[in-house]
Length: 262
Image 1: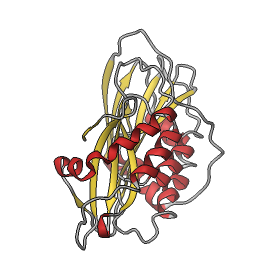
Image 2: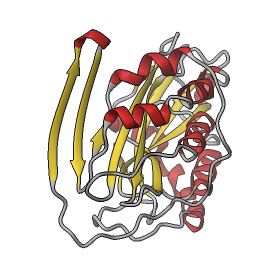
Image 3: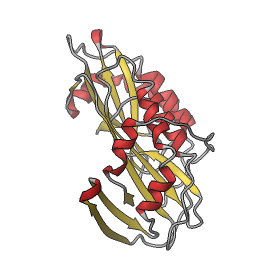
């Protein structure tokens, strides 16, 4: 996996733009029987205040090529947040966009990596733009890379720990079984179960205010699964944070709907 660090963050928070209509159905990536070989590459450029940490699996991509491909889209990705955050000053966190590119340069999947923004409409907007970006062909085979983006909240949400989060949700997660039919999970060559982190903001009276997601293991389910889970989670009745906004997180196996702590 390749992780492109903070060099894009300033651009993402500051600018605006547009993107082409995204393709659909990126739920699978083709299996590969070769064992993964990983090489750590470090790049630091103090003059440009960047810190890029790259890990390559099979193929490699030049970070400059990733920057160039994303340059005309970073503004639109930023606007997914700035145009939808509204008065929700407590809404903020990290979004990680994770791409899989095959050996011919074709996009095979895009996922929300292990972030904690917690706002599916914003995250979905970013995914749609991410799916429209064309990257150059990797060198040496298929490649993966992740671009993190940080969005700072202007207000404060109190984070509930793992045990309190799980207890707060309780048996209400049983309804998530209704969403399994929408998952469309493909085969995972790495053998990982698809685990999705669900982040929920809790407001006055214990009402869920916003729900978002992150793929912490495996490949992402189809978008209708996220739509279904968001609708159910917004109906959960949760403990009243009493004059504050709270932020909780749990994890769910998309194939079985089994719940665990994040």
